[in-house]
Image 1 (spheres, one colour):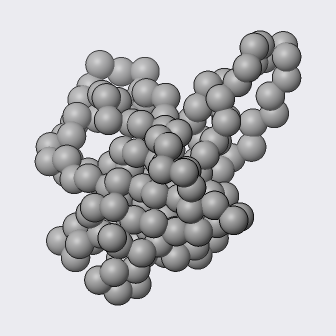
Image 2: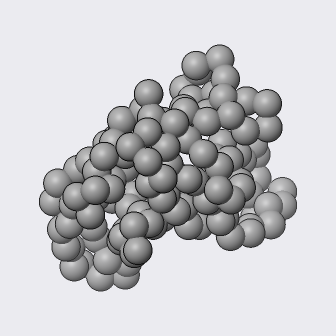
Length: 146
């Protein structure tokens, strides 16, 4: 996992005519709570804390998320064959939860794949104005380290 930590910092990509900026940070001994239990465990983790749009406006900030099951948390779960697997918990009403994979291509480039699970939102199961997912839903999008 040590080589993966080289992707820490600000990453930028263009997708759908928009510039997307992520800030990836490392958190040592992050607390994880197991669902439906009182059990906690600890591991080093990578977090995607800030998502900005093309205008540089912050559209999502996960800096204050305490547990990976909190809304909008994006936390690494494991590394397999040089790919960091993140879990995105969701926005309101469960929209967008799923898996994000980052693969280091070089010291300055990372490949992004976001595989959200589908959630059908209706006025009944998600009244009001539900959040939207700002993450680029695509495979092999190249982010460049700034």
